[in-house]
Image (cartoon, rainbow, N blue to C red; front, side):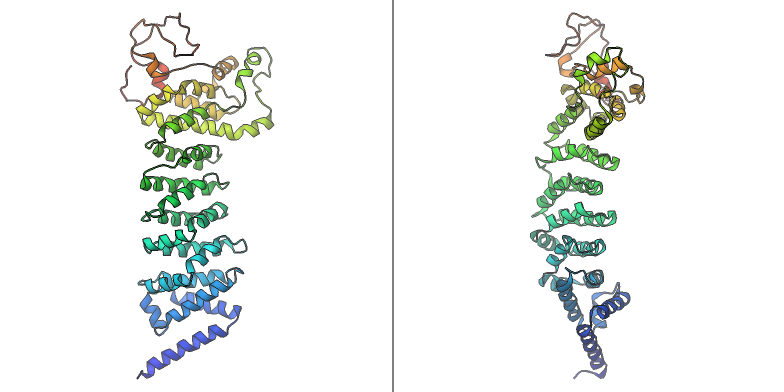
Length: 433
């Protein structure tokens, strides 16, 4: 026999559930407001006490209403917050299982792709997915098996709220940790975000990729082109994250491909500098007008990429002697000098000069029109392995297929590396020819 107190509690529960069942949209919205206000932060045992051991009866009603109305967005944020009170309560594993058994995770993922649902409502869905993912490996696998990575990545790319995008990043980072079965899927999903038109999505994807790369330990073949293309961004925070990822990737099997790609970016196919020499050496005052303003605007992404590549090369060369020597073999000095001749983009000139000489911040401001053309059309080939050991008065030997310097010219060489080589080697490296 139940006590009078227990009977009264059960009666209150049944009355509350009946009020919910008979209420319309407006009345249910008020019920949810009161529930959120009075039960935020309660433990599972406190919720059971509040509902006379029948809290699950209200949770199943919330879940059912969610599945019936999420397409219309009716009081969706309040419903999700109410469900969140159950799922985030201490010792809430039973509530979590009950929610997932009726397809709760799939419903949350479906809300992310609905254009009729508000951004704030989708943010609440992301928070609930975070709770599910943080509950253990099997729950992360459940999200991934429900095509969750694709839905979450697409939402990150389309979201207009930076705050919401940061919540999505937290979720993706959770999915890549402690999820060996599907961590590669998350990794590939992050790579697909790099061509996104959203700078914030690119920035967050690059940050999470650094973490994912260290966990997975191997690289995907497409990551090199995707990361190098991100350098076209005009957003410095995106370029910064791309360079940080490049610094990590040079420790993997894609190092050579990355270095080749960076050096190639220093000499974009436009404009054709080789066609400018006659004009530059003439007395035409408009000789340095390489392209029209409209053409410069069209070429801006390539020039931004050129400047970022020069900066990345400088960062890599200053931090690692072996990388500097490898880039010398790839004729990076020639390409950097060509970038210094790009008068259509001063930042390319500046970054190239900084990479060639760390103290030459204003070097590109001091060159004249003839020097610009010489830089843009130079055939310098400084490859450390091609020069060999030299002593005072030694004859400089040109690299294969290089027209500079002339073979007949004797240069009083100084001991040690050539100046162009020293410019790229990190200070204090102690390297000597």
